[in-house]
Amino acid sequence: MFVNLDVGVLHEPLSGRRWEPARLRLEVERRAAHYRQQQLAPGDRVFIGYGNCLEFFADLLSVWQLGATAVPVDARLTPFEIETLVRVARPRLFLHQGELEPSLAPIFEACNVSPLDTDAVPQSEAQVPVSSFTLDDDALILFTSGTTGDPKGVVHTHRSLRARWIALQQALGLESYRRTLCLLPTHFGHGLICNCLYPWLSGQELFILPPFSPQVIMRLGALIDEHEITFMSSVPSVWRLALKTARAPQKGSLKRIACGSAPLTAHLWEQIQAWGGTSEVLNTYGITETGSWVAGTTGGPFEAEDGLIGEPWGAVVAIMKSDDTAIPPGYGEPCATGETGFVWLNTPALMKGYLNRDDLTARAVSQGWFMTGDLGYLDAQGRLHLRGRTREEINKGGMKVYPADIDAVVERFAATRDMCCFGFDDPLYGQNVGVALVLEDTSADTLRELHAWMKHHLAAHQLPVKWYLLDAIPRTSRGKINRDSVAEACAAHEPVDLANMLGAGR
Image 1 (cartoon, rainbow, N blue to C red):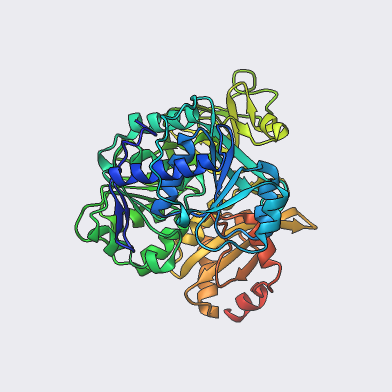
Image 2 (image 1 turned 90 degrees about the vertical axis):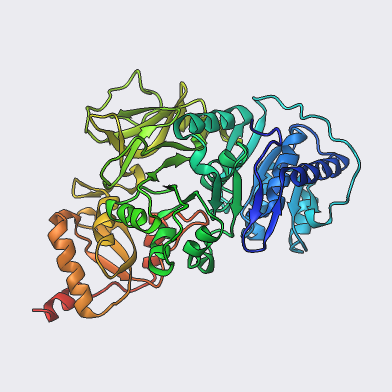
């Protein structure tokens, strides 16, 4: 199991291509033979500059066969961003498909990186020896931030990855993953480690789609029916579009749905259950540093609830009063049941550390415990509930405001298509509350109805005092929201004149 080439069938639903395990084995062997001829050696790093296709998975396994470390990168990165990552990670090879961006050539030459077009890999009769890597060798580096500044690369070993997959198999089994769909990017943990590699390396069939494609999302129900998909994972932003544009699947093949990257609200959770025709919608909690999915809602039935995550999968969760790694769990003061504090995790799937950043590693890891930066609590059943990120918490005159709580209310308003609450500097309160809105109707009547809705459901100190109407909420390449980035985008717009709007409604 896991990286022995006894894998499932790979499919590309849009192109109709599929690779059986025998074809995949040949592709891995010929690519590995070619890369070895390019002097790729154990311990070298290889950038894979494309994803979400059959060849990506062949290249990933061929790199591992040779004992090298795979570094999947977002194909949409600019040459400047690629140069930033290259200078930090120092790869031996940069794998790409088709013509290389000309401006990258001098960058690669200066850093002694060999670019290789994988579409031109020759046929080879050379035999590739059985991989000789050890479980503690580096397997995967995933960059989670800093492509234009100080990159933060999460380093996973073969041991930490296998620990995650074994924990998932013990907690979730494989039956529901028989025909798995991936429409998430393969350059980050959620899409690659859990949505793709967990089922596929366990022998289940994997169907690969382009990531975050509106045209694909609008066809989602039809694609699920056509290919009898039993499992898929996604993020809340994808579901908000799918629920409004895609017909629901009709054949009943879908057994389980996972949603990650941000906690589901109860409202969105129930909508996904109804659309998918399954009660098994798992609100998963995943961090790249812990091999992605580390907890989720299993063992139901249960009632959907804002921020409910559930039980840990191959991990121990501790809620502490401090986020100081000098006093990790076992030394610091734990929170009481139901009390919000800092979420710490202990798992054998924990990363080796941040690439070349011992300083960052020391600020996040202590005695095997990882300080997540999330706020949450454990209920009487030992289930994890999330309240938000520590850096997202808004301190309004000493009163704590959790943006996710406001998002959960605004999302329920009928005309809301998307939204994001954020904090901004306020001369009186220190911080105050703003909200970015994408609405189906921006008429004054609708805005007044939204204001009444929020006033009814939120405490006075939680009410956003600045509203911004946008065409779309900015998101990262992983589909996540960075509230600071949303606040910056809103700064270029004029806020809604709330006083005039509300006054006109009297």
